Amino acid sequence: MRTRTTLQEPEDFTSGEGLRALLNRLHEAGPGAWQHDPVAADLMVYAAQKYDLLARKHGLDPWEAASAAFDVMRTKAARTADDPWGVVTHAVRITCIAEERGQGLLCSVHQARRPNFSVFHDAERLSDRENPLTDYHASFQVTDPDPTDTDTGADADAGVGPPAVRMSAHAAMDDAIALFVALEWPPHVARAGVEHICQALARAGNRQSAYELLRRDKHARALLDVNRTAWSALLRALLGHPNPAYAATASGRGILLRLLIGESREALLRDDDLVLMISLAAPKPGGR
Image (cartoon, rainbow, N blue to C red; front, side, top):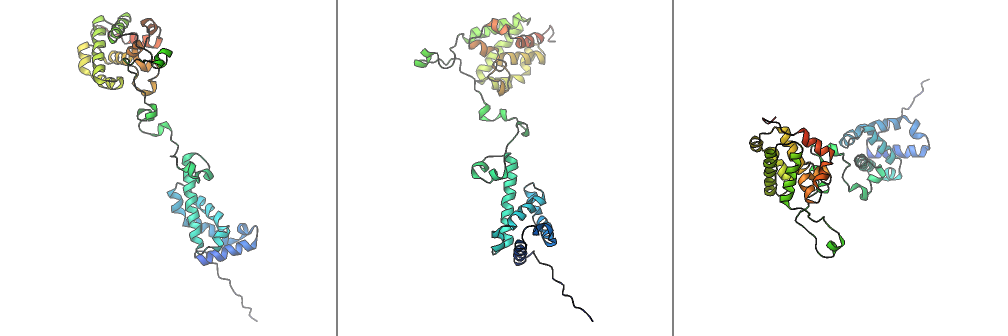
């Protein structure tokens, strides 16, 4: 006697109707069905393969996309939709975008889905850019105060606003020359160098532009007969450090500005870093 056995055809979850039938069966099977059903395991492998390119487009692993698909497949919306795979794909795409935004914004995926967080740009380290942020971002730019600008009216009476000019430009230049001479620079080199830099500063209009022009001024170095070290020290001491990040510091202001805003020559001589830089760079006979 022969017994006929009927083999059940595997469920075709690749089609919309097949996916709906499988999702309804798993839902009716109750808790644990997804964990123990072999067809459910095949479905998740298929989902990982189906959404592989979408996941990689957003910098994710394919199984992260499969996890998002698993979450939506268990909802009533997926089981009752006219196009179950369309609902799943749309949900996975939104989740991948939110995952990518969350990683960029350094926040949770839940926050990345909300417009009040997602409108911001990704977090950046200052070292991520080829040019430092301080070189071009307006928040880090500091303009030189106009030494000829004096306040009048109630603000001036109350002592509010920029410090008053206590020294003329010519007096500041003479004090700067005297400072270099006191730190063992030859008088003729100190005077010619300071005067040349002051003239270039007047033409350029601001210290940063003057610094960039003078830094490459080989003609001035030749006329003064000084080496590159002495010339660089002269520029930095008079005009200050060129990096905008130092603009509000003593190192960034430079001798000329510090004299114009009221610092005395004696106060500058108490600046150990400034004195050391000028002294070590003092030119020797022959430009060495």
